[in-house]
Image 1 (cartoon, chains in turn yellow, brown):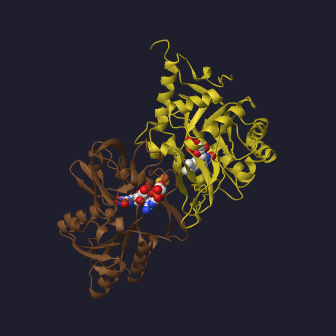
Image 2 (cartoon, chains in turn yellow, brown):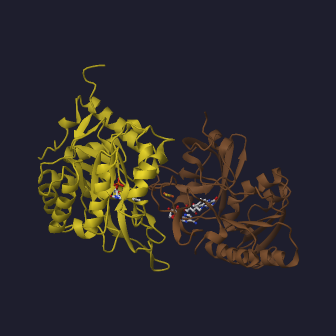
Image 3 (spheres, helix red, strand yellow):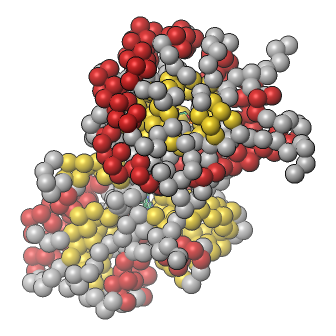
Length: 308
Length: 267
Ligand SMILES: Cc1cc2nc3c(=O)[nH]c(=O)nc-3n(C[C@H](O)[C@H](O)[C@H](O)COP(=O)(O)OP(=O)(O)OC[C@H]3O[C@@H](n4cnc5c(N)ncnc54)[C@H](O)[C@@H]3O)c2cc1C
Ligand SMILES: Cc1cc2nc3c(=O)[nH]c(=O)nc-3n(C[C@H](O)[C@H](O)[C@H](O)COP(=O)(O)O)c2cc1C
Ligand code: FES
């Protein structure tokens, strides 16, 4: 090994990963769906679909729609519920040597607490990612993520229930994301995931109906990358806990942009739908970049934006 | 041990891509891994071109398998199929598959009644071939807008399937809907152990479902919904399915489907 060979290992919010690339919640199922294409042991961390205290049926159809360089989704958090997850999904993931991060959602604080308590007691969970930002539910997660007081109350509540590393996933659908970021940090978050999907809408002009049954949905994919980069940079300048950057990452170069903006790790979402190997291709791209620029670690890049 | 349900994501080149009826193309490519495994009703998720400006893949049923090659028969709908139709010999695509479940004919239908509306017949050709191979008496009812858009009739006849045609404008065959042919068939024949297999526009599938429920004939539908991942993770492709224990569940067309029992679908 030459001395320029970079190390991709990172430890973010006390989550030790062999590389800084996670899968974004809701885009990688429970991991098992991708094993024909990917060795899960080579991913930085697997972040599973949002879990609620009881199973949720999800929204009516249609639930997705492709838009220029992106897609809208309004899935409505269809999931197996925490008991189903622990009984049926988690045991499979324990076969792998990869940190499993569980995305947690709910409509009320009590639901988040219930899920958190069960995850804290379960074997094989590396961290919790609190989804306070899901834009799809009429009376759900949305309200927490847009209000610093609600964010504070929720994060403090969950913090008391677990010693696991706690990530809080922020919504871009706010006027000033730094206000929510600080509220989450002050309430005890160990790291921040930035960003969730951006609220959007599309219409079939022939029928004049919305393209989604839910009318509005979350926009993801390359279309939101500039928004995500901007928000990572803003949050980086506002807090001192690490950031996991996401939103439209398709390649290693996209990930590098997030590191420069201030992310310590990244997550690959919609790209998994286009290319099932996307997360590993991103890892390779990062490694190539580091080699090309004779860097030894990701840390040299994090927040390295040169402002003219 | 080789995994029989293994999925692949492979680059391949277009061998041919030709207009076979008004608004419909047949694309052929070499895909040994999929050709060796694809079962009737299964589909592939095609990455058309990374330079086309499209983000997501597009799902198409495997139409036929010839040794290492597969074909897909597709209708021009929008941007994706438009770009696809422009591909020439040697152009590259990526094929993810084989995906989804398969039609069930383990009950030995007599006859098997295939009902295809428009490009829906594309999802039933591999089934017709498998039924022929299993010596199952098979009838095909093929519906289209008009004669110029009529699909698959020759292919079905070539494998010995008794094929009947309906067109919306009466330019060939029965003047009317393909579901009318189905009703007529059931009214005029005393069928032993019929099973219906259908794919087509929602309106047609609803009518087929009604016929199935009224007549009590077991019926399998190949559903087509917008897809994101086609691997079961995005939950974007679901349809509403009645559960035997009561209530309903949204099931994934890409994973639990695309083939569902007609009586289980809640429209
Ligand atoms: C399992 C499965 C098998 C299919 N097999 C065939 C086949 O063999 N031959 C064929 O002609 N068509 C088939 N379809 C439909 C085909 O996928 C769509 O017609 C195609 O995706 C349209 O893409 P577009 O970009 O041209 O249209 P657009 O309308 O621009 O597409 C926009 C979005 O809607 C989706 N979409 C549009 N129409 C349909 C539809 N009818 N069904 C599902 N998704 C749709 C597209 O995938 C895309 O995400 C199948 C669909 C599914 C789900
Ligand atoms: C179909 C779909 C489902 C998603 N489900 C969840 C979820 O359950 N919980 C969550 O926190 N984020 C969810 N997300 C958001 C992603 O994790 C990610 O934050 C967002 O899509 C931006 O990244 P991307 O552009 O790389 O996809 C979902 C996104 C998509 C496209
Ligand atoms: S297309 Fe993603 S779950 Fe079926």
